[in-house]
Length: 140
Image (cartoon, rainbow, N blue to C red; front, side):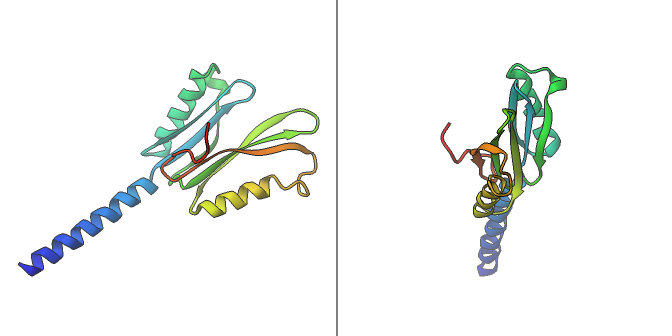
């Protein structure tokens, strides 16, 4: 009887770890059509996440052929969407995903916005940070 209880407890522990690993294993993808639309999606696989991100980009008003995948990761990990603007006017988004820790993704965003490394930028700001399940960490 004690052995069965121990096996049950161990089994629940393995199941709980499996559930946590499953959350981590989700994929994320970002798609954008410059000056038109963008999309981000999480899914069970990177292929599904890409398809959903492109569909969101199209639903936002862009043609499918204008929506390109700018980042896709499996596992999703922590991710960040950064807005950048060149001193001559053009602006764009850079996305990073698949990072294991929140502190690391924030440090990477700071490096992207380093004005000494990129003196031509007049604007550089984090738009959104997402956790490994794709949950937004910043307000809208």
